[in-house]
Amino acid sequence: MAHVDDQRVARVLDALEAQHPGAQLLVNDPWSIYYLTGFYADMFERFCGVLLARGSEPVILVNALHQLPEYDNARIAYHTDNDVVADAIAREVDPTKPLGIDTVMRSGFLMPLMERHAASEFFLGDFAVTAARTHKDAAEQELMRASSAANDAVMADAIKLVHEGVTEREIADQMLGLYRNHGCEGFSFPPIVSFGANAGD
Image (cartoon, rainbow, N blue to C red; front, side, top):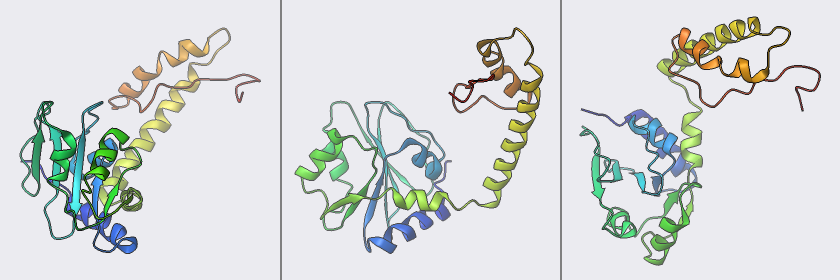
């Protein structure tokens, strides 16, 4: 059974309520959702969010095409492509409280919520998740150390690939293999390989 990280939720709500007492938060950014729930929620044009409020269990709002495992400390509220998404969201939001939203939330979802007066007011609230994510627990710290050590090892191997006549593209094409050799699943973004007098340009 899946589990929302209670300590992280508490830190997010503490940061939120320090500036907006009694507010609720609709987390929409895929990486922030992953931080709280353990699943990466990039649904493209479909909506996914996690609603947080003090004294209430988190509510994960997601399209039914993306079936999630059961959570022992959160409720999943599914909607379908035939539903009006704003109505599905509004059913979960407390209309008497302010609602923090993410800067990445699409206007196609936000504007209908505002038109429905789904909350007493709306404000940018993702600062609360950003603040919470700056705190790294022991497990996160160890993962960062392991990641950094693997990256250092890859950079040492990459330097050995540089020789007269090799192109930046040829080295870039080998980078994924180097990361996998050091136990990584992959890299966060396609590598940028540059060297020579004008590499900084």
